[in-house]
Image: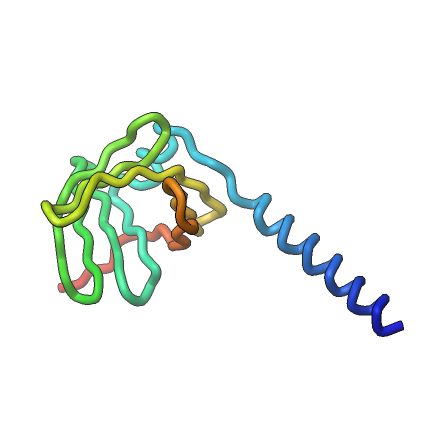
Length: 120
């Protein structure tokens, strides 16, 4: 009986995980531009990136601000922030305001897209 209960719990867990993943859908270039322009992507604690409509991005991580540019290339969101980092491009998947950025290799970056917070 314990084995059957564990199998049942495992199956429910897998089904829930699969359905949660299905809620995310990949955006195309024009959709990315429309969704990100004038918005802030953040983990809501440590960092944020503000995507200005003019193609500049302001990035703040642990109190350190940097500025660069953002653009769309082949249905990917690309950023180049100051001279210390390289150009990075990501597939963008969304579910409501939840966003996953998926680049080459590595784990997806989970974040929230929201209206910018006034930080004055």
